[in-house]
Image (tube, rainbow, N blue to C red; front, side, top):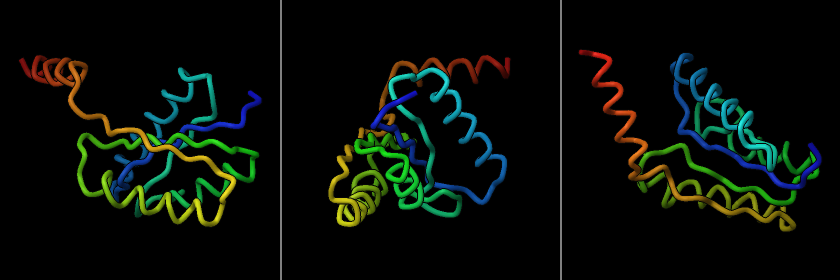
Length: 123
């Protein structure tokens, strides 16, 4: 795939290797289904790559547009403050880079469907 754009899915990060593996599975699922651009994962802390490392790697691949998608449920401190600050710092390093940050997952009927499915699994 020849593209100059990427989707960077950002998780919090976890000390749990199982949680990190599951996040990577989600990134792979998105990558397999979203053919418009490169899809990568990054973590705010603990796991690698962190956001600056992932952005550096994408820039080195010729990426000039990164759409950051927080893998967070709600608009908390990480999505309101921390991720935007990390991105602003990266824009100083890579002034040619266009980075946009999507809203977190938020409220969705799809989430209700998942919660109902999980509850039904216990019946």
